[in-house]
Image 1 (cartoon, rainbow over the protein chains, first blue to last red):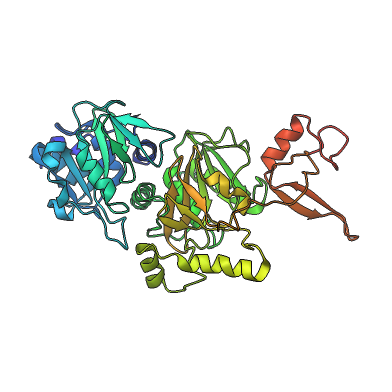
Image 2 (image 1 turned 45 degrees about the vertical axis):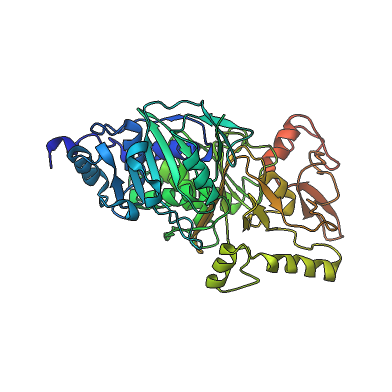
Length: 189
Length: 291
């Protein structure tokens, strides 16, 4: 392990993790709403927001899958040191991290079971651009309709069709994040 | 200043991560009860151990915490939980619904509509709405899986057959987003309409039963009923005797041993703010500063 991996965690974990969680909760409960987070300084290509999500949610009980470019020694060391999470293949992951292309095909990830739909993976998708425009969103958490710059439409429509099973996603870009739970209905504008 | 002997908000970080993951899955599948590894809390089961754990996992130091017990800010359960979080999290507390950012409640939803940025945490004794109809967890889990909720409609029908109306007056079952039947905790059915279209995040914690579930804002929540016996959000047929409100949920208070009684708002903050604004009910004290 390289020494750089030892830095970049929370300075005041109980408070910063709580603030990070509140941002994640608001984001997932209000799809399309973009939250700004702080506190993590992870190695490239991991974004600040993705780093905060991992520090808040991942630990030794949650296997993490790193996809594509994100499966590099710097990120592996950082995740193992700060979260203690086992790094696994896609099928066993509770959290998966990467850009949208690297996470394909998303059918590899757990979508929960009919009696325990909570046993589904959460994807942390790194996006080059994150803005409240583009694909139209409706459903729980949205008063009327919202918009979010999703990487595609069909995959999220297929995911909604699995409800109450399915994948839950966070989209991250720099220090900003947005959420898309499986319950959201997605349509191209 | 919080007590330095405890981690911020009492629970250790590993436990908070576990609870936070359960809350997020609950938000993603509205109305589904997510199992979680409930911890022993420094209060007995039945005193809100589930709600306290959810609150502890959500609290940030900037929060304004409000705790109510059956609508009141000044009853035993509310006072002790509020003091607990003042001690272990050092958060500011308030009685005003509009100022609070996180509200933990036992069996009431505040009268004032909640807004975005607020979180309402319910204390739940029995999270499984089918439990009194089917005691086996393996069976109720299968019933939720298959969306087999006929038994609940039979129960409501038996109410009508016996009493002429649906007699269930609290913990009235609801269907969430057309999928899961959910126990809204023992709130009076008067509060059921406030579950739907609420702008705040609603989280439910059951400590002894080890379940967390959630309603995201603006969720579709429908109280179960029949076409010829529609759901009615009932309340005592009176106005508040202190503030005169005709649209709030009322508690009946016996005032003497000759059958005298008065009806007062169960939501103490709602009643006191109306009183402060000059509204008076039938038995309101005539002098100023009465409440």
